[in-house]
Length: 482
Image 1 (tube, rainbow, N blue to C red):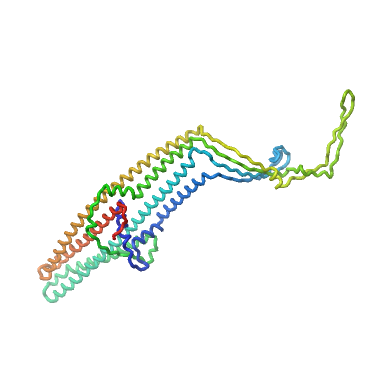
Image 2: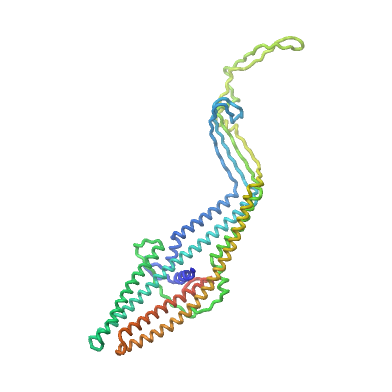
């Protein structure tokens, strides 16, 4: 469950904006940087951008379409002249131009529902990106907290080492004075060595934790890097406030992006059914086109060259007119030359326009459209299940968070009692050791128990704070330690 991570994020970020040098990072800065630069976030941002482009395309699909083109042909042998549609027994070079436009008048709701679905899909992608950004932030918060805990453990270990050093120095002084036997120092020397080893191990853990956070932020591991170590005091009255399950749950349902994302995907699935059903309906389009063409053998009949024209009489043909025999002849004009018609004049003369409407009615296409509708309906059922799962998971998380809060309170109270008892035991042992009634082993054992109790109280207090902040998060309040 990601609640502890949410908790760490919400606890540490808002209030710890303190003075720092250029290499110190607050949790808020680290989370912001990770959300802006993480490869996971950038991948989700890319998916969101794709969804935005899909939405823009859905909007553009409502606009008319316009396409132009040209074709160039070389016809060899007996071919049809595209400008006269007559057969010609010669080679022809031709070129045509076309411009077509169309606009959809009715498509069974395809464009309208696709546009609405694209809007929902974009919102769902943005919501998914928010969930991923939160997860990235939680990973950073978890790593940040690991550093803080390691640093705190290191500080405690160094204090414990100093305490042992002081005790060993006092013991050596008493041995030199003859009030203690030399054997009394051996347990303290062994404890000193163990504490030194612990300090070294914790120093290494701190460095590794810092390196993990640098890698998570995708920073250069060789650059200087440190984090701000905040110190905050809290009122126990705030930490032990009671919360109502139903109130927290109702608020969480309104604020959690996972629920919203599931609901958006369900809405998109509803629209997908309408999109699929549009395939069962007719489609009506209005179209228009412009065209013209050119042929290399087209002639300019309006401007003949008759400079060499002759009238030639044909052979006489005998005929009978009103019972009388006579002859007639035909006269043909020869020598008239028609020049080739130019490129642009042909384009002008052959220019044509057309407008019309087309109706497409689906009759039978292997039941593809009906299968698409059934598939969309099945997917819609799946989104219902996803919403139910998200709601159940949220309820489980809220109930677990409240349970963790109750357990953290009990653990904190028990740790307080343990610390008080350990402190009293150490004080008594220290007095006995000073009086010579206890040996060094008794003293080191009491010191170790006191240190463990102090660490446990600190850990349980932070856990209580974290669990309380999770509930505040579910209630929709600003996550802050102020």
